[in-house]
Amino acid sequence: MAATLNVIFGPCGAGKTTYAHAFARRERAVAFILDDWMARMFGPDILEPIEYAWMLERVARCEAQIWSTAAATITAGASVILDIGLMRKDDRARVREIAEATDLPLQWHFVDAAKEVRRARVAGRNTIKGETFAIDVSPEMFDFIEGVYEAPEPGELAGAIVSSSD
Image (tube, rainbow, N blue to C red):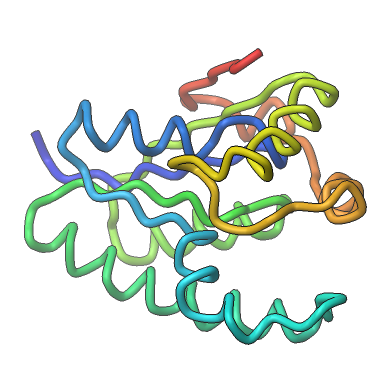
């Protein structure tokens, strides 16, 4: 089987990272989780309250390194999983353009759950700090991310693997 670029997207708290870890174990793929990179690279430097521009600059740096490493991983023959946010349609379109321009075989994975399930899951993750915990997501941050998130159009889901984690 050829190496594939698997891209996971969905709203905050939907279960994307849990899905990515399970998929990586099952398919022997390499998962690249943006929140993990951000926490390790910049977590100690985060000042409260988080400044959006400061965060976006660092997200861009992490994404660039993730893309470089993921491309090398695929070239070496291993499939990769990207869990890098992709909250907006433009972000997902950019990933699609990169995959097409570099002839990477692309498989989308959409993970969703009801808003109140996601809110409760995030609050629990903040407390438990288990396998999928990278950073605290306050109720205010959750609401902010909800305002940024753009649900996919039906065309975006054509050919995607769709999962609900309710």
